[in-house]
Length: 179
Image (cartoon, rainbow, N blue to C red; front, side):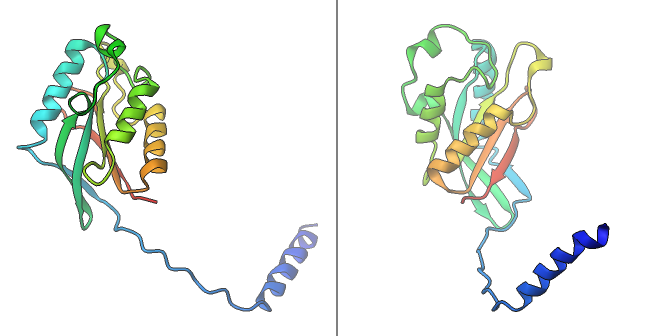
């Protein structure tokens, strides 16, 4: 029986050998990013304030990130809170919302995707600052990955997305090459 299942496959493979060669398409890709660095003077103070505001207000906050790719390193050189760039709906600032990636509504997601795009911006950082430490997800959540996908559908550009999840710790970041 095993021989009978291999025969049609072998016949197909031998038949393909008679076809003319298909030219290879070479796709240029950016080098693999091995490291994401953060400018200490310009970005770290913004991230510290974003975290402290998020904990104080008990809601997830977002900032746009900008930077540049140099070889295998993406350097984050600037960050600005989303609320400094656009007016957020009053309902988000008026009452505290439990801070996790699910609490960020579709309006904030849309604003961050539209506001934090190229050429000035290359993605976002947001907080996972739940008052319950065990609920602070230290990586991009499934909801976060949906936002990253929506961002890439919109911009088709290299990006970096980060999560602040604990005071005093550097953010967790991921780079994604543009489409």
